Image 1 (tube, rainbow, N blue to C red):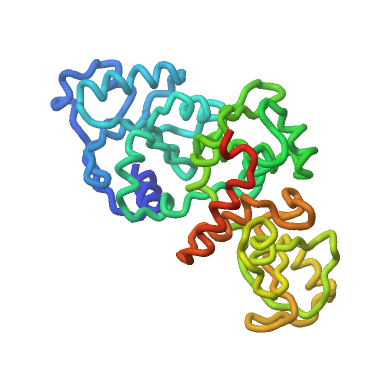
Image 2 (cartoon, helix red, strand yellow):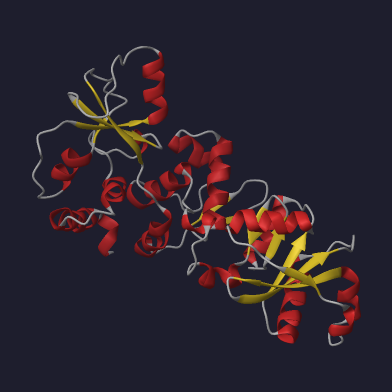
Length: 325
């Protein structure tokens, strides 16, 4: 259990104190549960919780865990979190679907019953939970270009030109964060809710600017790798005036390859003919008429405090056809 405690503390960034609860204090708990678990009591972010360390080799179904959690939370009047040994990812997903609190050492912490409280604290992992780049592309493509609803992973991989494994991991990321559901066993499909505006609003807090870094260069880059970005794109989509600089977005991996091949000789952080945004994903997957897509551009500016830019962002959303549907 010490390893589990260390893992939890590393994940949440806070110390957690646990004490083993003796059977004499749990007389109202069914004996079969006391035989299957060691029960620990502790406090997490001001909330009393009970951790149930599974010691029985017996396999339980998600439905059994759900019933046990309901029974124990009713008797103990506090959240229950199962501490489980290694289980298959399929079974973990089934626990997530049923919103069962669980911890698997060095693998996953899933405590949906505490998420509302957790957001009130300065927590390492929850401060920086974002969609994976490929997961963000999936959502943005679905919202702006073509519906991916009920498409297979293989179909999505072909459309977005990602490896199948990347799409599989991205959809799992979306599923675990509550952005989509999945169907099928042998050939899995992604399922989004039909209201795209609600999907955008749900996913927005989990999305981040695609731009990792901004640099200046003097060389022209291949046309198929660069897309007009920043103020150039904002002026294209809205009434915002361009500022005269040349901004381009490029996939950061493509940029590294060009640098390695010495197509780019000089990089500056301060001055150059072209201002290059290095993106976490390939902007070409979503681009419109050689400009970065409106929603990726929105994400680049979503933290702005400039009133003119805020007005331009409103216009950006108005340009997206789904927004008022």
